[in-house]
Image (cartoon, rainbow, N blue to C red; front, side, top):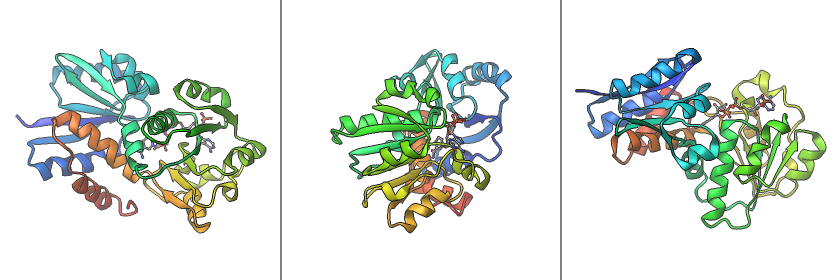
Length: 279
Ligand code: NDP
């Protein structure tokens, strides 16, 4: 009766989620395994039917399925509706319930920061999760926090206005210079930091010197140190990569799968072991 949980994506071979979740099962002595399922888009619906039929503990959902999977759930959380995406699905009373723990993951990783002017780069699902997390931060004490979004396709970013962003700007030198002047939080929620080739293909350079002296610069990338964070650190700015967000979103999913508080330290240690560049 070993429980089974997993992550579906396409491709999925580089996922760190199995290492993180299996460490958590071991740490708590739970008889369960977590595995990666490579599921192409045309098989997504069948795979989700299988979650119910096989009585899985639950599934994480990653690229490219986060939006499509939401439409295939029977019920979804408010956070899933707000972001238009699910990264976690659990069977509940014979139905599939979906939510997006990326929001909780990012909000948790920012704990302690009290930004007043935030700028988010990107228009994808991760940017939506960040904007919703910042809105929650504003509601929970960071009153007056303004959120601007900058994207190379500003039209694609317009839906973020409904999520709580105050403005959407095109990724141009003048727009970046204006919006970053005095901002104290910059979140790169694009996939540009995934490798050097993409980093070099930014529509315009990001003028970090315009930021406030005590600003935080965050990237959601967790498998390497993006150039943006290296540049920010060289300027004395505070930096945060995506590793803590990754662990915290996994922890929130783990609790949904098992009903148990997640062993965060064991999950962090597993991430560091699986990927020595993560801190
Ligand atoms: P999407 O593919 O949905 O969105 C990517 C966004 O990045 C799009 O707005 C895209 O613009 C933009 N972009 C890509 N390359 C460039 C570039 N060279 N210059 C400017 N903009 C660019 O991805 P997600 O939103 O799902 O994820 C974004 C990143 O966040 C991924 O790298 C992912 O690994 C990471 N992530 C990390 C998490 C964590 O726990 N740490 C959780 C979730 C995501 P366009 O639309 O024009 O192509």
